[in-house]
Amino acid sequence: MSFVQKHQLWSAEQAEAALRMRRIAEEQGLKTIRFSFPDQHGILRGKALAVDAALSSLEDGCSITTTLLAKDTSHRTVFPVFTAGGGFGMSEMQGGSDALMVADPTMFRVLPWAPGTGWVLCDLYFANGAPVPFATRNLYRSALAALDQRGYQFKAGLEVECHIFKVEDPRLAPGDAGSPGQPGVPPTVSLLTQGYQYLTEQRFDQMEPALETIRANLTALGLPLRSIELEYGPSQCEFVLQPGIGMEPADTMVLFRSAVKQIAQRHGYHATFMCRPRIPNVMSSGWHLHQSLVARDGSNAFMTSETDGLSALGRHYMAGLLAHARAAAVFSTPTINGYRRYRAYSLAPDRAIWGRDNRGVMIRVLGGPGDRATRLENRIGEPAANPYLYMASQIAAGLDGVDRKLDPGPSADVPYETKASLLPKSLREAVDALKADAFFRNAFGATFIDYYTFIKTAEIDRFNAEVSDWEQREYFEMF
Image 1 (cartoon, rainbow, N blue to C red):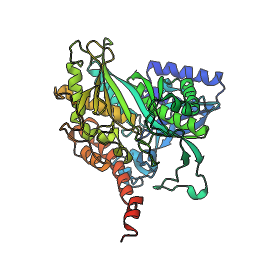
Image 2 (cartoon, rainbow, N blue to C red):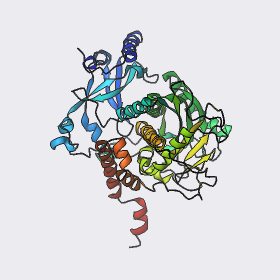
Image 3 (cartoon, one colour):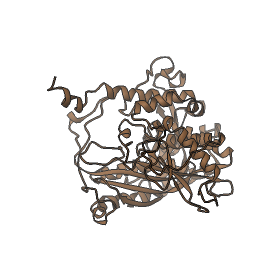
Image 4 (spheres, rainbow, N blue to C red):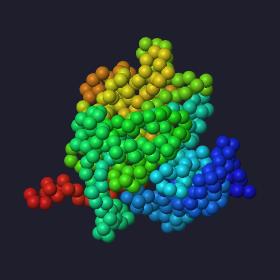
């Protein structure tokens, strides 16, 4: 009996998809299949298996070290994995032990930019069949299950900004290499446009060779691309993807980001979802998450016939997002760099407020009476956010607003002057807000919150220990 069968890990749909995956691998003569899982940062990690080994591992899983769950964004292991409990208080995480990547065959793809290569997204399990509690895809699945029990599905659309530059020097000399806790020297790049001509066709045409290469590959990959738009800043663009239900939008986001970076790299470009690169005159990038709830009958639960354009359920849900905005910020904006975006009068929010079709608020309400596309656009996120945590935090906070019948208050028509709770000014402030928040400790579990804030604190401490260029300029000569 296989691992999948023993622990009943696949649905009938997944079992059928596994048969289809085997057939495609044979018909297309695949040489390798990448087994990947999204880590705590929403970055894909895994192994490339020879096709025979991959197909034999399909139902029995592929081993992967649990230390990958112990790393911060520098890829440094920040937990004492060789102590009792591995720093997690769990014997399963001790000593750099293994977990199993179990493929979700419904996520199988053939990569159009990598000849003879397949790809499949995986979930993490311990040897006893228990889901790994630090695997964020599992956490999001739990949030969706809680929503399903109430008779709803989560629907989300992705509107993601990023920068695409031309690589001038990949910085691959031995002296440019990194070390644990100290990433290597980033590539030297040049711009594709000078920017500050928002949505002009001329600037778009300058970026079109790069964007068309990316578009063609994303389409061949089967991602639901809706539009590619030129953004305001130099070399900045925005991708809009069609809305999806349940796991789909989060899975789409991790595959989309990884695909864009790989496609760009193979054609001499550097794509980055970092919020604000340290390049003169660039603009911050955001990730606007459009969301609504779908009822059992397929109707939009946020839609109403009333003139205010949002159902009572939608208003309570939105109030929950606002009430928990500070504690949830570390999920929507998980990097130190991302907090440089929260600025007044900048088309980014700086406080927990909502408004009707207003781009200065945190929650932008879109739709009107009888509009089946009625939705909430949360403008708080950065493109580097882990989508499983971002979306799970939305569901949890929104449902709390529904349970408590919270009132979001009036629309904020002057968003940067309205009195409201301010969003965190730094990752440290966001982490402290999450640590102090009893709601998320209960919703996500104390084990996960302690784990995630530990990793984020390690990143912050490493940042604070380094002398910045600003400090060197300010004090080196003067004192």
